[in-house]
Image 1: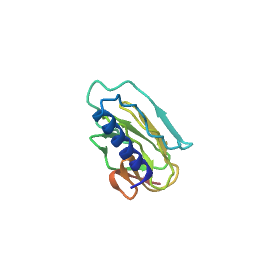
Image 2: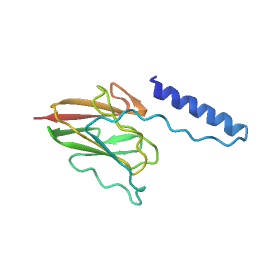
Image 3: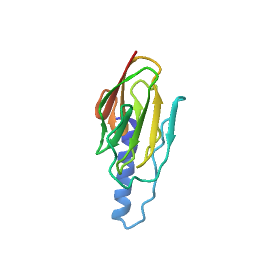
Image 4: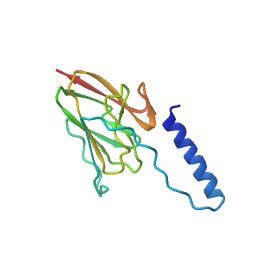
Length: 142
């Protein structure tokens, strides 16, 4: 387990214990990973309608998954991830080349791929490096 997963387990255990004692639970958000220099992040109001199918350079985040799970783009393409689910998620590259903050419903994160290659990524809350759990792949071609 990584440190983010351990923090989430500790937080969930604390909240469970507090609620069992009748005490109000404190709200704490996990620390967000640093944002990559070529990344963008925006916050939008929660979506009122179901999300539209992703465009050629878009990835939808919902139902504890990235859709499409594998996306092939050309060098220079900016991929936009949009959280259309009810839980917070991150977009974190296995190799550390990009990382989003925690994305709430309606939030977007974009990253421009300037080098060809295969970029595996995951949600720090629900996945792990190596395509474990909530994860995906961006394939960047010339």
